Length: 377
Image 1: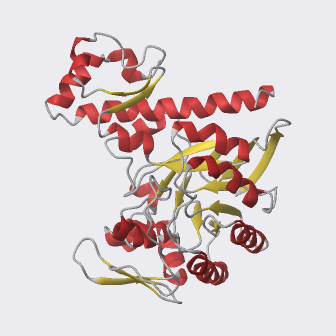
Image 2 (image 1 turned 90 degrees about the vertical axis):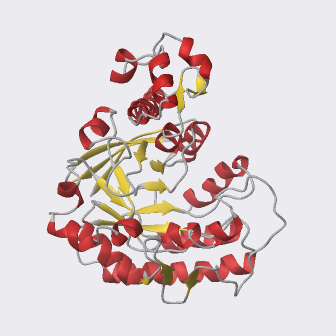
C-alpha cells in the first residue's frame, strides 16, 4: 500500500489523498461500506460497484464463524470469493468484544443516547464474553460453543481472508467504562498491537487502532504509542462519549499526535451529519452501516432529508425516490412502487433503497472532496 496526500485544506484538517493497493486506488476522503459477511446486504458486487463504492470492509469475527477463513482461502481469498475486484479491508474482531459483551449487557452503542447512571469498573467482565490478558473468549452466536480470539488468532484469520488492509486486534471499550477500566483496557490494546505487528507475515497493510475512550490523556497516550509503531496506517476506534458534539474535539486530540503521512480510518462512524465534521478533523476513510442498515428498514436518504418509504402517503407519490438523483434506481423507479413493495414485504424494495442510499452517500463524500479541492472546506 502507498498513501499520497494530494492537497491539505487551509481551512481545516481535511485533506485529499490516494490509497494505492494491489487491487486499485482509493480516492480519499472516502466512505467504506460494510460487507459484514462478504456481501453488502441485498446487493451483488457489480451493483455495489455501480454505486461508486471504492472499497469495502468485511467482518473478521463473522467470517471466522461462517464459512471460516479456511474456506475463503481455498476460494482464492475474499476478492475471488465475493467477486469484488476493488480494495478490501477486514476489521480485527475487536468491535465484537464490545458489541457481544458490555454493549449487549447494557444496551449501549458507541455513543450514549441517554445517561444511564451505570458504570463499568476495572475488573468487571461481560456476561457472555470473557476478556483476558491474552485475548477474548466468545460464545458462538451460531451454536454457543466457546471460541478464542487474541492478537495472534486475529492476524492469522485476516491473513487467510486476504484483504488489502487489515487491523490490529483491540478491545473496543464501552461509553460507560470508567477511567480505571479504560486505562487497563488500553494497556492490553497496546500490548496486543505489538504482538499483531510481530505476527503478520504477509504483504497486507496493517493498521493499528487508537483507543482511550472519552478520556483526553488516554486518547493522546494511545495516539502517541500506536503512532510510534511501524503500522501502515491507523484506525481510530472505541466510543466517543456522551454526545456527538464531543467527537470532533476527541478526533483532534488523536489526529494531532498521529504521523501525518499515513492514512487515518475512523471505525464505525458515518451518519450524514457526521461526515463533514470527521473529514474536517482529518479523517481519510470511515466505515458505517447507516446507508445499508437504514435502507433495510425502508429509510431513504436524499435531497429531502431522511424519509420513511413505509408511510402510506408515498403510495400517492408518483415521483422519483429522490428528484435530485441520477442513480439507476431513481431514473427507473418511483416512490409509489417502492412503498408498495415495502408494504407487500417484497425484498426488492430493500435492494432498491440500499442501492440509492449507497450512491447518495458516495456522492455526498465526492462533493466534499470537490469542495476540499476548491478550497471551500
